[in-house]
Amino acid sequence: MSATFGESTTFSETSIDRVRDYWNSRPCNLRHSPASVGSREYFDQVEARKYLVETHIPGFADYPRWAGRRVLEIGCGLGTETMNFARAGARVTAVDLSSRSLELARQRAEVFGLQDRITFIEADAERLAEFVEPSRYDLVYSFGVIHHTPHPGRALEQIRRHFVGPDTTFKMMVYYRWAWKVLAILVREAHGAFWKLDEAVARNSEAQTGCPVTYTYTRRSVRELLEHSGFTVEDVFVDHIFPYRVPDYVKYRYVKAFPFNVLPDPAMRALEQRLGWHLCVTSRLAEGTARDR
Image (cartoon, rainbow, N blue to C red; front, top):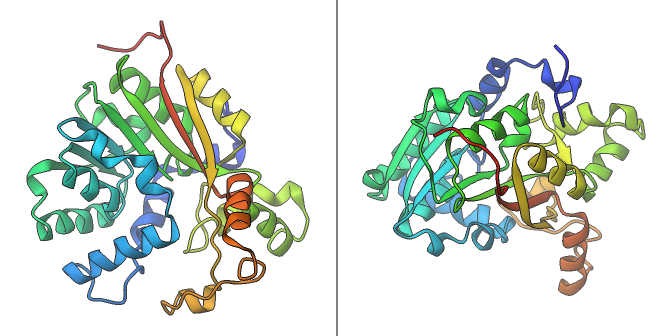
């Protein structure tokens, strides 16, 4: 099978079952709290830690804007953003490939009394319309997900054909090719062998090593990918460098590593905006683009 636009044969032949198994074995952010998994304390600590480390997410998601509106979240994981969209008054359809993640996200919604505002669906983003009834949403939101599916273009085609209209906002985060983290992986894991970089980045892109698929994008390539898929890009920004020493972080201690421990805040922010790991994109359906009704 050959890769399509914006995809690599490195990942395009990976089975979706392998991706599902990876995320079921350890859902994203599962170990963000030492409290009993599934408790209110656990979910509160998961959210607090996520936003401590990834401070840009609430601003990017802009939860209050979607009060009274319909949100489709593709790749909800444990449901941190899902809960905040619902708390702000949105009606949320939250999908994920991982049944284990959805189990915890449903439990979370019940703990906080938000289950009536959220519909959870297990789904493959590349075949989304087979699982989610096609309908126009006010916001389609996908944070850190589409770069983990073997064929990102297929997922974008599903979104464009079945779930957006002229007034829909589409927000997604994918990983940035020129990030500080990629440079560190090139040096420490690929030992300078840039031709092995894609595989090295995938293996080391998440807290649990061995992720089977991880694409990275430049500002230009993500724009080209979206435009090829029928979207027009309205805004792109880069953010987030993980600054903490991992041995301390896994013990819930927040000690910054060098050089981040000596950088003044303005310098750190400038570095994140140039070499951050998260490439955050806001787009809309391109004018004149056809979609299914």
